[in-house]
View (cartoon, helix red, strand yellow):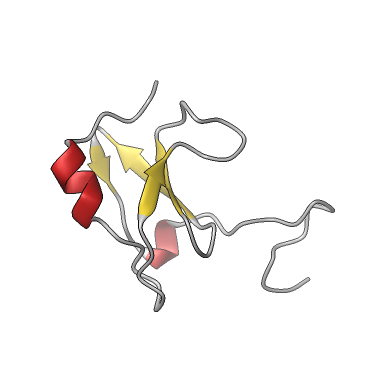
Length: 73
């Protein structure tokens, strides 16, 4: 199911990592996923019951094509 957030809310939400980049709905693999993806670092934040969980501890790190995390082995 696709994330349905108010457009104004989506405009002000940003990744909590130091770069504070904008977020987009879905993931690269699934644009309809219940998640928000950082446009800069690629972290994926879950959306649970319509509420974005913008905690770094809850985020999924982006992976490289070989399956490793982008920040290390």
